[in-house]
Image (tube, rainbow, N blue to C red; front, side, top):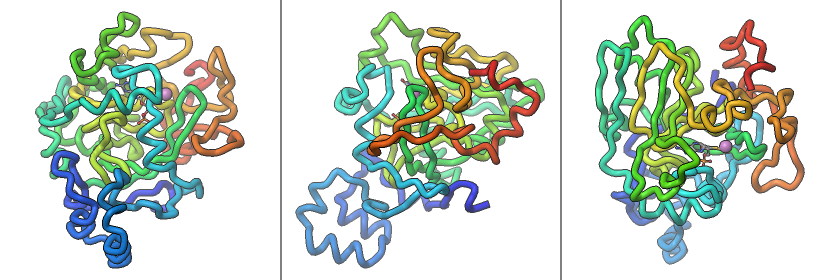
Length: 317
Ligand SMILES: Nc1nc2c(c(=O)[nH]1)N[C@H]1C(S)=C(S)[C@@H](COP(=O)(O)O)O[C@H]1N2
Ligand SMILES: [Mo]
C-alpha cells in the first residue's frame, strides 16, 4: 500500500494557515521539527526569518514513489496555470498576491442526502490532512513533482451521502472579477468548472488539496482548496473551489466548452493519444534538461486503469 503512492498523515496542527503565519523559528518550535533544524535556525536567525521558503521539508531529498525528486517550492509557486489571474504562467504569482482566501466556504450538495456548506476550517479539522507526493502533468507537456497536503475527496463525498442517482461530480471555482482580472476575458465561460465521474471521484488518489510543502495553499496554486487528480491532465485539477455538486448529468467543463476537440472530459494522461497540435509521448520536467517519456495514466495505472475497462481510450482524449 505505502509504496503505491507517497502518503503520510500529518496532524492539522502542523499546517500553518497563511493568516496566522509565524516566523520560521516560531513555526519550527510549534511543529516540533527535529532538533537539528532548531540548531541550524539558531545559527542563522537572519536567513531563517527572511526566507519565504516552506518551514517543513525544506531542502530534504524527498522523492515520489518512482524516485523522482520534488520540484522546489520556488518552481511550484512561480510557474502556474491559473487563467483567472493571467494566461502568462510567470505573471500569475504576483497577480495572486491580492487574492483573499479567508473566510471561505465550500457548498457540497446536489443529489446528496445530507448536503452541507463547510467552512475551510471545518474541512481541516474534520479530515486528517496527509502529504501526497504526486506528479502533475499539464496537457501542454510539462510536468512537476509536488508534495501536496490534503484529504481524499471520497471522505467529503461520503459525509454528504450521495443519492443513488448521482453519477458525476461537478466542481466550480470562485467568481471574483474584482480580484481576478482574467475573469474579465470574454474568451472563457467563467466561472471555471470541471467534473469527474463519481467512481473517479471516489478513487483513493483523488484529493482535495489544502496546502503544499507543509504550508497552507498559496493563492497561485488554488487557495484555499483545490482538486488534485494526478492521473489526468492538470486542467482537471480545478483550483479555489466554492461548489461541489453531485449530479446525474455529465458536467460541462470550461476547457471542453472552449475547444472540445482538444480537451475532452476524461483527459487521462496518455502518451499514445496526441493533442491535435502536439505530441504527448514525452514531457519536460520543470528544472530538468532532457525530456522524459510520458507514462500511461501519469504512472498511476495500477490504481486507476480499472476505472476505464472496456472504454476505447483513443476516443477519450
Ligand atoms: N480555476 C482554475 N483551475 C485550474 C486552472 C485554471 O486556469 N483555473 N488551470 C489548470 C491547469 S491547466 C493546470 S496545469 C493546473 C496547474 O496547477 P498549479 O499551478 O498548482 O501547478 O491547474 C489547473 N486548475
Ligand atoms: Mo495544464
